[in-house]
Length: 212
Image (tube, rainbow, N blue to C red):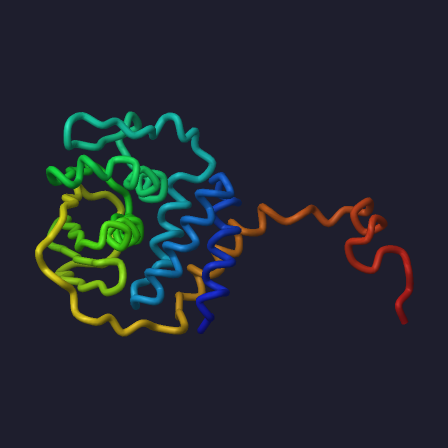
């Protein structure tokens, strides 16, 4: 299965919305999925893992707590989409010290937000978790991954870096596994209007008329 980046972004946005995220966060999740896919990372699978875990949960139970340079959650897990959306709000903190993010789900998705932050600051940001590390300046990204690119829960160190990543070769199409794409479509289907008799009469589909 091969899909354009536009298809990946479009379906990912609907899937995130179907899982209960606001339209704004759903758009960010979709951009992250597209960005990862263009960098030859299985962003679709990472997003499915996040949506499955946080499916229609009360986001207040996963609110971000900040204690000095440590970020954590009331609910023991942090969503990479909601957490990433806070990064620019705490830019001054990162400029003076590294940030420790505890129990971050799928840190590879958080990388997208770090890349946009790095681009805005015209600097390089590094992420390290487990045996994996990534550096990005927002334009190019270098991966050093000894384990899986996808991981459910990790403690992540985020900081500015003096290193500069080499030019990245971007992909123009994504090839998610069929079951992953199907799961995204299942989440997205929740956003569709129900196929009722009233909706058909109102103009959805052929209604009661005979088009033949």
